[in-house]
Length: 188
Image 1 (cartoon, one colour):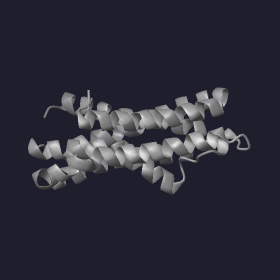
Image 2 (cartoon, helix red, strand yellow; image 1 turned 90 degrees about the vertical axis):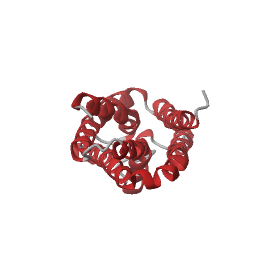
Image 3 (cartoon, one colour; image 1 turned 30 degrees about the horizontal axis):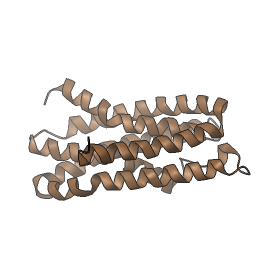
Image 4 (cartoon, helix red, strand yellow; image 1 turned 30 degrees about the vertical axis):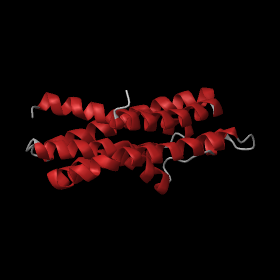
């Protein structure tokens, strides 16, 4: 597989993390760089880890992985999205305290949910006998930078739009989950 193809794959895989990063940026209570770096690093790390797991699973487990990966991503993103909408609708809650995406359990769920597709890519790499080191390095780095950019965009927009954007963000997460489900079930 050539370098250009790997870069395009990396950008494609990073798009879910980018969308979720924008949503996370809405809820960062203060513009502390460590929170943004923690979130971006986690997204990049899991985006690089999942292809390795998929690659190791290879042909043996590909049938089983394909059967449920979309349901896991859909469930996690829908759960988080509904939680965000519910908390944003609470009039007693300050919009900047709704969800802390840098909270370890929340960050773990988001990181796994946005990187499930990368698992299938890893299986594909195994089928194509691709050396996994360079692709996962590129995927992780691109996801890190795209996520950082998304967090910055989301934080700036969140300051202007507040709770309304938190509700929109919840629907975006649910929409990404539905998109993943539709793509994998070949509904359209």
